[in-house]
Image (cartoon, rainbow, N blue to C red; front, side, top):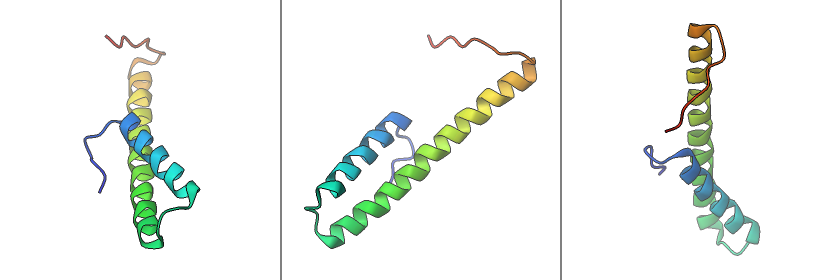
Length: 73
């Protein structure tokens, strides 16, 4: 199960680790299926976070009618 509170970067790192493990091919089939399912959940979580970020940026640009510089402090 994917941690809903994990950051995009944490989810992406875990996804990369699963892909690496599966690419090696030394995972038993049952485990590989479970890892694949978890990877798909991580892909969805990452995609959802990217879409949320895109929507937030689009709203900021639309409300102001101009491109806004972001301070990440």
